[in-house]
Length: 355
Image (cartoon, rainbow, N blue to C red; front, side):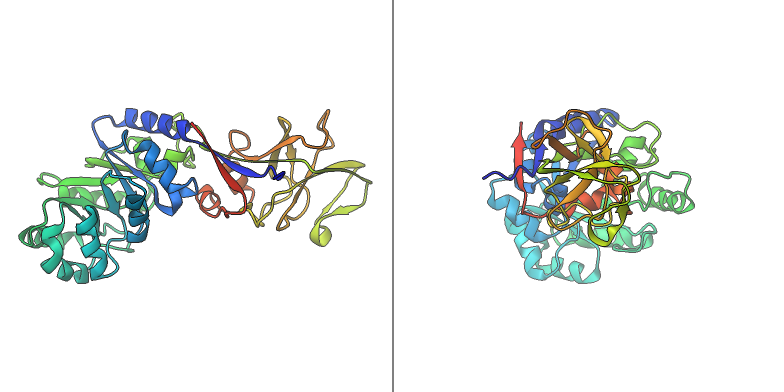
């Protein structure tokens, strides 16, 4: 097949990012978050590659965990949303999964199924108000779950904006967290990618790293860890067209040539996961040269103003995101975040893995 559009996944970069991030908090246990199909990188391949160099993995819900177990992944697996049903909890015991417990219904299921669990994590709502129990209930719930035969308990919470440590909400969350867990005997988990990269001073035996694992840069971090992008979204030029001054390009004629221009067409579109909302000027690398997007993104194609690029020909390589431009650069030009771009990829373009 001749279509060159593909997502190239650098598994070695993920391993390097883990080593870089572990170096920031060497004494902590490291949990790699592979939910959302490993943020679009392919959960099975990523988990198989890294399970020997991390302490545990995390997914969003039970079905994601089952897929990894069926693929032979044996690392400890945390289910961040916890069991949705009692049968999910039974499956957690059977497959040695670690459920997050965040509701009274789940506690009730644990009364009969808890003895099969080697570990459970209790979600404390420190102020984000999505899941979890109030801090005042933590000790009672912990004692109840242990009485049901659960092997071990970890206290966890989640920060709403860890990249902004001076944010009033974060300060309140950290105060609530420390008042709840400081001096306790249970293991704890608070740090996410941003908190890990910031070296945030807070009680957290476990760090849970997702976006940073794949080389995503957290906006606002003053000294980000040296992370390598693990994904390169690439294609090639299938047409070069001369567009006279005053002529428009693409749907709606959004972009109009301000001079006699050369437009490159690349067979990538929102049907592959490239953002429809990408603005004119969004950077694209064409044969090693950065050029601006020109015109609205189509389902199957984008058009790029390559007037200032030299020595281009049909088949020239194009990079939509990777080392340059970064996925976060593209997201900033598209009114979204790199997290969304990573996880919105479609199956139309192949993933190609490199080690």
